[in-house]
Every structure is written in structure tokens, then in C-alpha cells.
Amino acid sequence: MSRRHYLDHASTSPLRPEARDAVVAVLDAGVGDPARIHEEGMAARVLVEEAREQVAALVGARSREVVFTSGATESIATAVWGASRQGGSHQVVPAVEHSAVREQAARAGEVTVVGVDRLGRVDPDEVIAAIRPGETSLVHVQWGNHEVGTRQPVAEVVTACRERGVLVHVDAAQGVGHDPVAFDELGADLMSVSAHKFGGPAGVGALLVRRGLRLDPLLLGGDQERARRAGHESTAAVVGFGAAASALLRDDLLGVESTSNRRQVGAIVAAAEAMDGIEVYGDPVDRLPHIVCLGVHGVEPQPVLIGLDRAGIAVHSGSSCASEDLLPSPVLEAMGVDAQRSLRVSVGWSTTDDDVDALLDALPRVVADLRRLASG
Image 1 (spheres, rainbow, N blue to C red):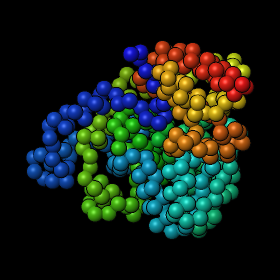
Image 2: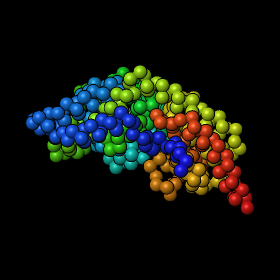
Image 3: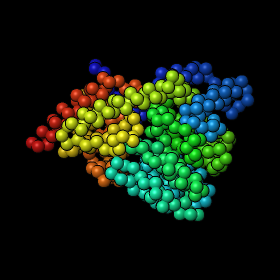
């Protein structure tokens, strides 16, 4: 059987060896509840706090600002809930935010949706103009877009919100592990992070909470995470998260991988631009290093996915969190481009040039065959 070529890292990235080894070691050791004061519990507590320091080092935060969660979705829900409890039922949401942000904010109260340009970038002035003094509890801005890769003007939005005394949340699930992130330097109030997007275990993430900010917890029932998130910590997953974070800081592996991924994405962009009927979406320069979104005109996305899958290549299409019924992408709709026929390719830590070459060999053939069928 020929080797598969996995190019869907923006959905989830394979587990790094360092993270796997750390998870297995914890499972084999059989450590106890980190909240207990017996030897097994204290051993688990040490592991959790070491992992907290490792994650904090990766994201440029203090360890006490790291609250472990089940993933970015829970982190986002916690940010939305906690901010709404501070006062004010209104939130500001750019149209290209992840569905976890859009839907949680809508559930919490009234939302002002801010549009984007054709590259998928929001205008900071429009975000700030949407703030309602005394009513707006939270402003959202993502680090970089999960479908087209465009980076957002995070620093400008954060600075303006802090000047106005309005809380700001940054969804950095696609940024952390691919871009250098410095939470404290940025000055954001809240930031959501997910481990499995850069090679950590699935089912664990973090909400970064600025020092001095107090939020009501979303989950109640215990005093875990300094009473900020109830529930027994998943020690093995947390330790795997920390191991993945620590691996990226050794010998500037983050920079090495980012450079490699940007080169690989550049090769995909160059090949796509040379093909008839394929358009590259998103900012051509100021973008995340690992994501590219292609508009494939004249064919439906599902047959393209199936054709590539048969060729041993895994990619994605449609709304980021949609099932394979391939609903139109709200991100692409907001950008004013064809939201029905997109192909998202995302590389990562395990991607080889052979994976990219396989895609560039198969994609023209698959698309050409489908266009011939469509033309009869």
C-alpha cells in the first residue's frame, strides 16, 4: 500500500513523538488526582505545573495566566461567558471568526458582525466603531484565519480596546505553534489555544487570562485550575500539550518549521496560479505559514476531495467545522468570493516535500478529469 499524504493540519495535526512519549509515560506511571495531597496526587500536580510552564513559555505568558481546558472551543466559550457576566450583553465579532466564536457570542447576547475585505482582513477602525460604551462586554479578533490563512491586525485592535477599557479575546488556535506568539507583550485580555493544531494531544487546550482579570468560570463543581475551571485535569493530555510546546522551543524548531511550511505553501500557490480556473484566496504575503485556500472553478468540491483521497491525499473543503456535506463557507461568503468551491490545503510539522509533490501531481489530473465529465 502506497504512503498517504496528509495535508489537513489545520483540522488536526498528527501527534508529535515528544508528546506521544510524554503521554505514554504518564499513563504507564499511573499518577493520581492532581488535587490530592498524597504522593500520587502530588506527583501529578508537579507534572501539570511543569506543563503549564512549558505552555506559558511557548505563548509568552506567565504560568499563572494559563488555564487548562478541553480545547479551544471550551476556551472560547469560557471567554464569552465570563466576559458577558462582567456586564454588557453586546459583543463584536468579525465575520470571518471561527464558528465557535460566532455561535457562542450569539448565544450570549447581541452581536455586531464586522465585515472584511476581499483578502479576509478586518479593518481595525470598523471593529472599534462597533464598540458600544457601557454595553460591549467583549471584542473578538482571531490571530489568523482558519480557512484562508490571512493574519488579522491583532495588535491594533487590542491596543484600541485596552484604551477604551473593553475586554478583547484573541482566538490563536491556528497561530500558536506556527507563529511566534507573545501574550503578555500583545496586551490581550484573553487568548484561546488548542494543543492538537500543532502536534499536541486532542482534547486539551488553554485559555490565557491576563493577570489581574477575574472571570466567572464556565464549569462549576470544583476548585481546579485555581477555581477557574472545574473538573479533574487530564494529566496525560496536559503533559503531552506541554511536551509539544517545549519541543517547539528547542533549537528554534518553531522557526525552522515555519520557514519550511511557508516554502511548501509557496510551492502550492505557485503551481495553483499556473493552473486554469484556480484562484488563491487570502492575503498573498501577510498570512499564516501553513494554510492556503484555493478556489477551484467549474467543479464541485466533494468530487475533488474524493479524487484526491483516492490518490492518497487528505485535504479539506468548505466551512472549517462542517461535516462533509460541504456547507458554503461563511468566511468566503464574507470575503465576497465563491463560497461553494474551495479547497483548503494545510501543512505542518510532519509534512514532507514529497507530500506537496504528490498534491501538485494529482490535483491537475483530478480537476481536469472532473471538468471533462462535467462538459460531457
